[in-house]
Amino acid sequence: LNTTSGSEDQAYRDNLVTTVAGRLGYAITPMLYAYTEAAGNLHDFSGDTTYNLLAPNVQSAGTIYNSQGYRVVGGLGTDRFSLFKGEIYAGYQQQLYDYKAFGAPSSPVYGGKISWFPTRAWTISASLDESYQDSGLLISGNPTGSAAYVTAATTSVMYAMSRQWTGSLNAAYSNVVYVSGGRHDHRWSAGPTVNYEIWSNLFATLNYSLVKVESNAEGGSFTRNQFSLGATYKY
Image (cartoon, rainbow, N blue to C red; front, side, top):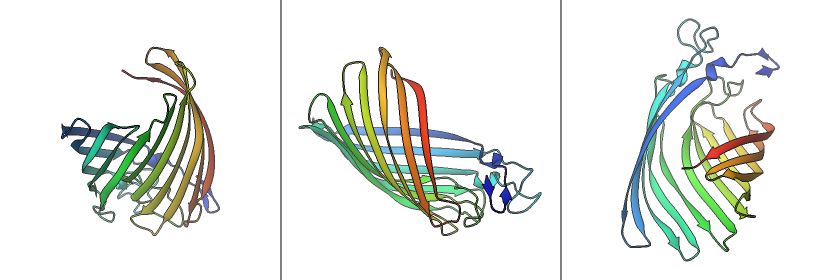
């Protein structure tokens, strides 16, 4: 990370995240179901001991983000109502940090998702979700990074050109409020995705994404253009 104050190695951001989730549902009617969903996570950061932002030789800059968390929601949904399907849900989430200064931030969870199928070829989807993310960049306006609450709205328009070819246009907005440090980010992203079915259930994917972040933290704003090529297998 290069800034006006110098360069910093970011090896402290290397981490392993383990998540376990379960979902239980009940069909109230043929068109309406209720469900509950629980998830737990464990975040283990490598912690680069060669650079300690807070207290040299006491705690590494990475390991201050070690944490355990959970999320529980309940909701209602429908697999198909006319040309629509979707879900609404609400619940609670909390993340417990080993580093006492970050404490145990928590928040309500709310959201929903809906899909519309105007024709066989077109699918239009939208979603809203309140979630939780780990640390941001360590910069002068946010010297220790921080956990953050994220309210995200996404939309997608997909068109099936043929059995083998599908394309979609995706857009999203996220409001990111950090637990400490006063940092507040607005994040926009948009871009197309093209999928080609190589053979049954195996897809090649080409994606372009434009991401723009506006932050009140010095050095936190940026624009990124990203191209990716990959493969997806669905069973």
